[in-house]
Length: 324
Image 1 (cartoon, one colour):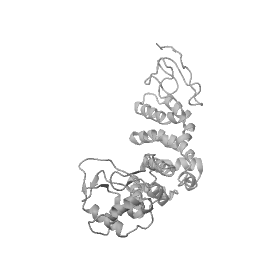
Image 2 (cartoon, helix red, strand yellow):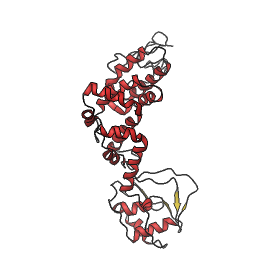
Image 3 (cartoon, one colour):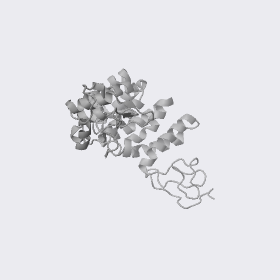
Image 4 (cartoon, one colour):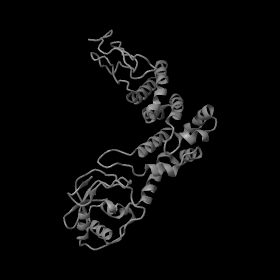
């Protein structure tokens, strides 16, 4: 996708070149951009397919043309995707030539370092060391987190989503829970590194291997860690079907622990859309959300036909005990 309004409002579809093209066109664009003035209004941040990020402003060049902060990056690292008419406009710029800075170029090495720093900041030294010992390929995860934002607002690539989901899980498990997690993994799988070969593999980590582990952690953890795990169950996708019966059973047995009740409802709500379970009473004459516990409506009596077959609902069209 490309706009001719302004200069270099383009959306590359190919990875950035390993080495930048540092010819007179790149230097001309760098010189003009160095003299540009940022707009006074917020424009939002754009991410290139390779992972380079724009600022939240447009920029007015000395000749009056409007551009964006990725203009030099596009000319240097996505030259083959810059239209010829836009290259001609850059050729006509008359504001000298300068060598672009590393920050303006935003080459692949800089983007990869930023992805690695994101992982380190999210997990901290203790957790990162543990996950690495258990088989996490940090460099592979960094590469998968770099870029992958598709053009025309199509979201992220499957590889990027896959990496984002794994990082979400790793972040949800606090450092003080790692020893308990290791006990659970060794109980179910023997060696934690053997488990990690599949559960931490990038790309294609095995989501099914995480289901019993997260269920155990939800029952063991407390506070915001348990809440985070409950809210993030959805990253396991279709594998969460195996967790559904246990979550329903737990919801019956937690008693008066209101915090645990709330967290289990969050977990059920996180998983329900994936499995096709309605988020409110399926009875069209009721549709209560508060009385619906993902099994049965306390108000009208409508229910899921089978707790082992999510998405199969009874009570459609019936009034039940309290329907109007």
